[in-house]
Image (cartoon, rainbow, N blue to C red):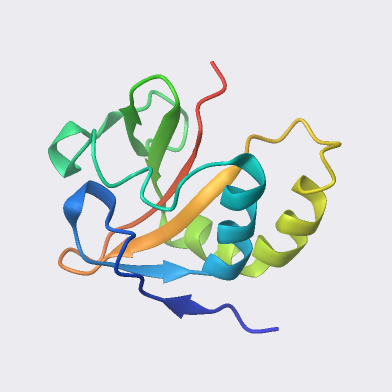
Length: 121
């Protein structure tokens, strides 16, 4: 199955226009977790992204203590596109230690790609 992309009028991370990837899968996870579609619309912006200190050097932003927005490298973006459906099938069993990825998107204006997940710290 080819990865899907779309846009949604209620999903606007940081108030920006975005292209969504595999939102059928990630929307299912949001629904199962009781997370509203607009959870990433406020509480962060591109200027609040900071170096994560991780070996990959990706930038991250936090939405309170609940969610993390992480910028994706090209390779990480491609990997997430490839595994989205199998990731959904695995995580929705509830028998996982993986943190739930809730959104995968591209900022239309900048072309930068991100995912949003629950903060597990």
